[in-house]
Image 1 (spheres, rainbow, N blue to C red):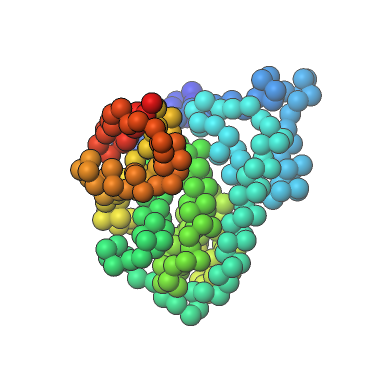
Image 2 (spheres, one colour; image 1 turned 135 degrees about the horizontal axis):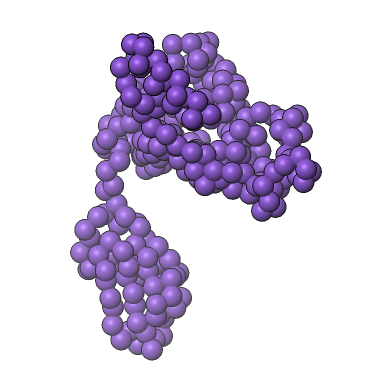
Length: 282
């Protein structure tokens, strides 16, 4: 196919219908999907029939699984069990949107918010939504479909955990963008979620692609691993570039740490800024 595509394009160039020398700006070869490590073929009887899976799970689940199962250019090995994980993602997405059914009819979200004015759970959601928009956009444009889908799964986990504790404006902000991110990879799911929210206009009529807020990508705090004798006991969240004395104060208040150091001699304390606080005891 590539041979004929180049031949025809160069023929059209020679007779003046096009000026470019090559038919493609970028050429990416897709990998092979195998079945139990063997290339699929009719003679081997190991072909996966898409109709069997679209009939059971729907075309969105089948499509998402093909994108998620491995790097596009490398391919992967088909797994009947693997597709059930993608199905769970779709079902959990429905459950999330159904909790906020009709919310877009009563609340309008702004294009962006001042993250400094948001509550902690709202900050977490706002950051995750904006980071996902940035990553998803980059991944799709670079054929990294598996990591693009993975970023949506991470976003779902964040929204499931924290969205109910946010204001309605942040809820609408997050859900509208989640539905639009779903549209390229799971169009039926994205459209249904859009409708569940109460949106009258289809995602695919004059579609809008949201930009991310650069301010939301800036981290003001970091999780520091707290170890006792080199073993992880807990993590604490601290402002970036915190001094050792500030970190120490919080570390020695943590009951998970006190459990392992009470009644023991502290030999030394090692602080790697923004990363690790290790207490050596004997």
